[in-house]
Length: 278
Image 1: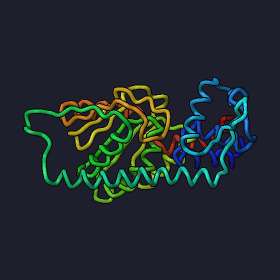
Image 2: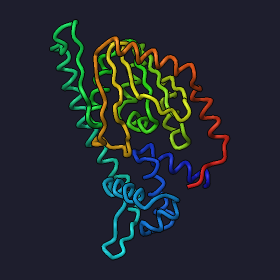
Image 3: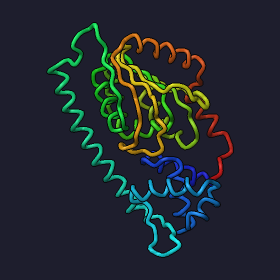
């Protein structure tokens, strides 16, 4: 795969596509309409996986199925497809901004914990709830927040968090996170480094996914098998303001941080390697 092809894929992912969606859309753009059987053979994957990825691209307005039988799938013109994806993100972002303002106003007027003797626990059931809650937590965090997250969440971060994270850092806050950095996400990780977020790489990490705000509030994943960059993606994430649990997660984070590799070093290693094939 040419360097320009890798750059194109990276830009598609930063625009909100999953790695598989970016590869499939790029393949259809480059080689023209194909049925799922040939796509599965060309991309060396299962037909069921191709169907799932195609459905995600159809939902984004980037792929169209034919009306003939057997069905073939064609990439929508790049300008039309990106406009459709952008409008969807803009709508979601406006809704998130509205909810963020409402939550900020509510937080000024009341405290939700009835007593310091009790902690609150709740389950967040989709990425919309996770994004909204994270934005609210960042707005009220004073000193530091940390996270251990899957790489795909860096796409959500670029879409929804970077501006708020930069404001947090500009007012003296510290943000660190650990992830498994792979080649399609290099540019996204660089965006985080550019605003002075501290990032470390932990190869093939499969442990608990979590974040902690000011050693008090935490969010930890019960189930976060995220397939698509969508606010409707189902997850199960535990939110709590129990400081004891927050301290436990923070201790785990510090141990992982010592084992991890600086992101800049990992990015340099990836760029020196031969490019993977689609």
